[in-house]
Length: 255
Image (cartoon, rainbow, N blue to C red; front, side, top):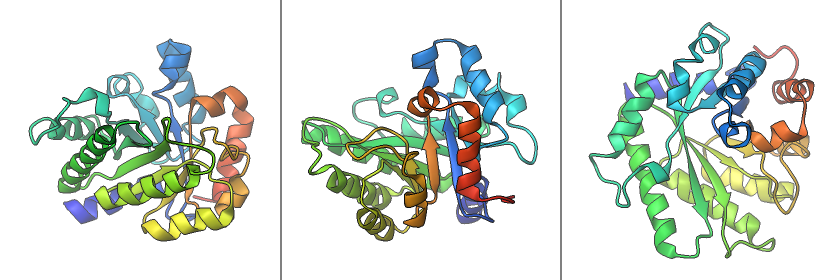
């Protein structure tokens, strides 16, 4: 099932006509809004204006009706390093991947943080991504990795280099799609995209160089494959603005 299953699922995430994607992160909004009804409101509002939606597995059953139908967004389930033992092993990781498949996920998403104060923390994160990638590959489940510079070692001067390192390490570990923050110059962005060989999405978090949404057209012209938005974007933009992002990403008439 591996290769063909993964190709089919990736085509649910990335529009095969425009070769672009807009992914909505609804699971993180619980930290800000606290109410399940707010997560449901996000799903209801954006289900026709996104290609994928990230949810907690516990919410999938309650939101199932928003995930059904030919034009429904693909379900993406987050797998977090904090949920596994300090030393992830062959027995613990498959359970997270199997759980994602059991709730109907088209992909799993995880994060790789680069810039840890302790090298062993970064190494543990890499091992975790590698475990997830290997188990996901067995059943043809795509892995999306958010590449996020984080920690005291990260500065404005080395931010882009940190993103480039995280992107390369994540794809070498087995990521099928990566999401990176905005890095400023188009030449740097193109270098990262050309260097990984996988679809690259922009992760809309504030960086020293601005946000992905504010620089979306430049990013698209540089070869980016779309956008991942969450809490920070919802706080800044209204529903109509986010719908417009979808149109800009895909172009009018995208199927």
